Image 1 (cartoon, one colour):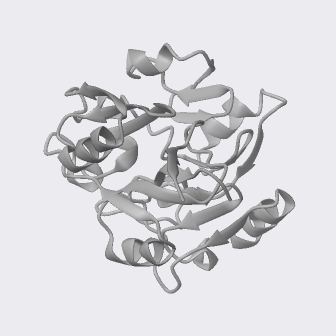
Image 2 (cartoon, rainbow, N blue to C red; image 1 turned 30 degrees about the vertical axis):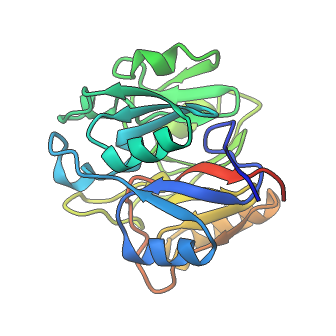
Image 3 (tube, rainbow, N blue to C red; image 1 turned 90 degrees about the vertical axis):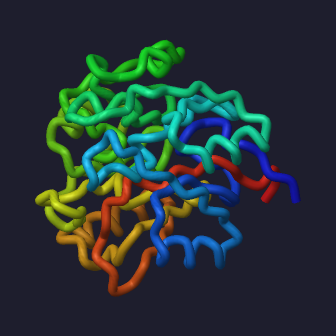
Length: 248
């Protein structure tokens, strides 16, 4: 069966066939068994080490075959070029925070959620409504489950989106997602959709302090999940779905 680029960023309509993610053996093993190709990020030495491989720092999917990519991501660039993608390269993804977050924006349905002061202008120029937040790690802080439904562990994000009647958000506690060297990671950084109604967690969701709330929210919205049992929920910069089956 033929593959196609996912038209609406982060929101596959069919079974996902390719994702972009940081190198992680357990993630790659599980997704490969589901016939999902993992295009791994390369280290950006201008970023702090805990986020130097994070997909949500290094790639932004604009729509369909259009992407903004950190110019050091050779494997990703080659894959996209081989599939006739339209790529804008950037060399401006550099620490410190918040300037390292130029591409770390949550594209959800009709909205872009980001800190507009530090966001790449090519993202802001999209024909979407802007929800401006102070949090630089916007995409990392948001687990997208539908075009107008999210889970977040950031109170400022929750307060910002709660002003919009067409967005439903679940606020969960911080602290259950781990990341190297930092006190905690984010819920969006350990997750990503791998099907229209199927969410993947990089770690064991039952280890989250708000496990029951999350499960109930997913169930109420018709979303199933798979995870990695007995592994801490780990922020690796999210799982970015980019290609899916044309049918089925």
